[in-house]
Length: 260
Image (cartoon, rainbow, N blue to C red; front, side, top):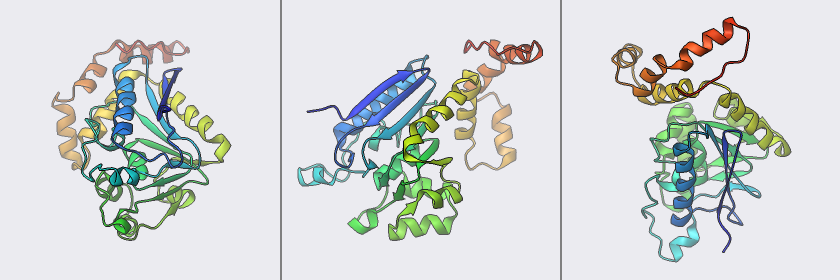
């Protein structure tokens, strides 16, 4: 049987491709394979950004309903990263871009929501269809979507299962870019390379701070920031890179980041 997940590392970017015809549906084995790919991204210091995409007309149709007929339970354990290897991988610490090439349905939409940035093909569509199947989008959909969209719009999608096109998603700020299908991966890679060019500890500190202060009032967030409780942020403040950036600016040359 062909591998469902392919990885290519180049220029500090790990491109992870879901290739499980016909709809890139995800079962437990595929979730574990995706988690292994995201774990590679986390653990390899040469890798700075991940891109997750799919083949064909689907980004992912979500949970493999065929698996249910073969005995895979609706609440099956998808491993340490949760469904699709990313939806509960809270300690990844590096940015992930979802390059949504087509339909992102159910758990496929939840996978995209678990990413940090979304670049979408203009043919992409997003939907949380679980209510039409007697289920709930509990792999992050009911948790993340109300944080990313106005409450009324999020509830409309969750309660009706209707599809949202890429242009509508862009109007609500859900996606970063909408591009032609043949420009999708170039756009995702260009965005990834902009991140790669930034200082690694600074990028890690941004990820840490945003996660740690999500939903906090600003005064409380400032208190946490100044309390010395965020280790990546503290490393960044004392790093060689924090001195290198201003020095390179003053010397009118590109910075040489070391991640130290």
